[in-house]
Image (tube, rainbow over all chains, first blue to last red; front, side):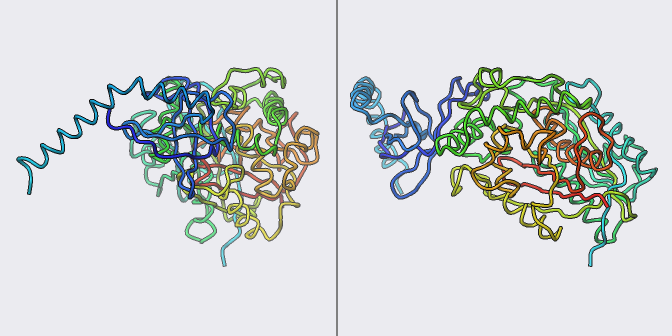
Amino acid sequence: MTPTTVAGVGEIVSFTVLHAAPEGFRSPLNIAVVELEGGARFVCHGAETRGLKIGSSVAIEAIDDVYYFSHLGALERARLFWRRAGHAGDRANAIARSLAKRVWNRGPHAS
Amino acid sequence: MPRSVYVAGAGMTRVGRRSEPLQELMADAAHGALAEAGIERPGMLVVAAMNPEEFLGDGNFASNVATYLGLADTPTIRVETATSSGAAAFYAAFAQVASGLYDSVLVVGGEKMTHLATPKVSEIIGRSIDPYERSYGATMPALAGLITRALLARKLVTPREIAQVAVKNHANAALNPYAHFQQAVTAEEVMESRMVAEPLRLLHCCPISDGAAALVVTAERTPVRVAGVGQGTDTLAVRHRDSLTSFKANRMAARAAFQMAGFGPERVDFAELHDAFAPFELISLEDIGLVPPGKAGRVTLDGETARDGRLPINPSGGLKGRGHPLAATGIAQLVECVWQLTRRVGARQVPGRVALAHSIGGLATNNWITILEAV
C-alpha cells in the first residue's frame, strides 16, 4: 500500500450498494458521490453504509489512489482510529519505501 | 426548406432470448417494414447497432447487414449513440429524406447479447460510462441507483409510485406478442424483488434482450408524418451534473422536438418513454413536460398513464416489459407508435393522433425525442 492521506471531510451527494458488481469488483460494492467543501465531487468506495443518508458528513481518504468514505460519528471515529492504528505497520513500511525511493531518485538518477 | 417526411412501413421481431444471428433478426424486421411500405429497394440503408464488435465479434456492421439483406449496392451507414442508437439512426434517415438526398430510406436496428453472461453484458454496456466513474465499478444500474436514491431523498417520488411503473408496463407487455415478458407483476413482487443497486430492485430494471426493429421513411405521403425530432446531450460524467433528479438531455431534446413540431406537449396523446429503470419514466414524464413538475408519481399511481388513462405511457410494455435490445429499442418504440397511430395493435390499442418516443443514450448523455402525427 502507498501512503494513506486524509483528503478531507465531504458530504454525501448520493450512494448505492451494488449487488451485481462488474468484473474485477467484489459484491456488494458501496459506491458514493461525495462533495468536498468548495464543490469538488469524487466517486468513492466505502466499507459501511448503515445509517448513511444524502447530506451525511463523511471523511474521505485515498488508499492506493482510490478514494474511500467513512462515517464521522463518534463510534465510527473510534473505529477509524483503530483501523488506522491497525495499519500502522503498513504505513511505516510505506513511509520507509517512499523515503527509500526518494533517496534512490536523488542518487544515481539525479540530474 | 426541408421536405415533409413520412413513415411508410414498420417491422420488428419478437424481443427476448433469440437463437438466430443478429443479421437474420435485422433482416426479419427489415423485410417486414419493406413489405408494409411496398418498397423492394430503398434509396439508402441506415443500420443501428450499439456494440456488435464486442457482443458478437463482428465489425464493418453496416456493410455486413446490407450484404445479408441483398442490398450490397445500396448506400449504407451505421449510427451509434450508445443505448439510443436506434433513435439516432432514425434521425439520420429522417434527415436524408428531409434534405432531399433520398426519397426512401430503410432504418434497421438490432442487438444480440443474451448469449453472454450477465456480468459481461453489464460490463460491455458500462463502457458507455465516464472512465473515472467506471474505475470505481459504476455500472448503469449503479448510476441509476444513485439517481433513484436522490429522487426518494428529495421526496419527489415514493417507492410505491416507482413500483407502479413496472406494474403498468408489465401489464401492457402481457398484451404485446412482441414483448420479452408476457406476464403481469404485482407491486409487492416488484418491491420485494432482490436488490440490484440499492434502492433499485431487479423488477425496476429492464431485462437483457435480443431483437431487431425497422422502419421505412419516405418523402411520399403516408398516414404517419414525422412532426419533429430533437436531440439533447450532457456530460459523460454524472457526478458533475447540477441535478441528479432531472436529465438536461431530456429537456433539451424535448425543446428541439416540440419546436420543430410547432406545438407543445399538451398535444401528445400517448408516448413510449425510455424506462430502462422504472424511475426514469417518472423523471422523463416531467422533463419532457408531459406532466407538471412533482406530479409524475401521483399521476402514475392514479392510473392516468395506464392504457385506459388520459395519457397512456409505454403501451408496448416499454423497455421494462417489451425488453431492451439496445440499438433496436429506439426504433421499436417508433414501430409501436406507428402501429398504434394506424390502429393495428389489437387489445393494447390506445386512442390518439400524436405519439412521442423518447430514447436515452448512455446515462442520459445523448437523448432523442421523436414526435409522430397521424395525418
